[in-house]
Image 1 (cartoon, one colour):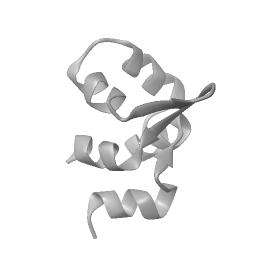
Image 2 (cartoon, helix red, strand yellow; image 1 turned 30 degrees about the vertical axis):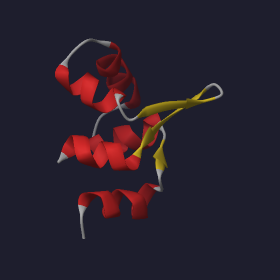
Image 3 (cartoon, helix red, strand yellow; image 1 turned 90 degrees about the horizontal axis):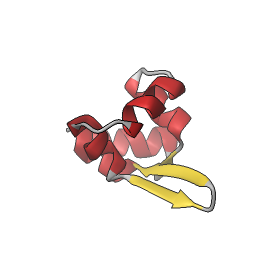
Image 4 (cartoon, helix red, strand yellow; image 1 turned 90 degrees about the vertical axis):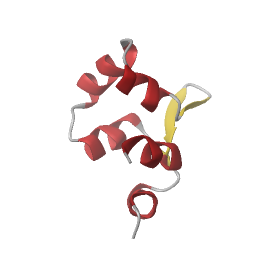
Length: 68
């Protein structure tokens, strides 16, 4: 089973910030701070970021690609 399949099975196609923080073993506040700063990790993760209204989600397929 690939990483993308595991993420999709556990969280679905879109992850919230809290779910992404859980996946990365980080606190939601710490992850939010990291993603707001410039850096290679933030760039890779922010590519997967989409906004639906006021809510922020991250595409599971892009997260799996960034982590691989």
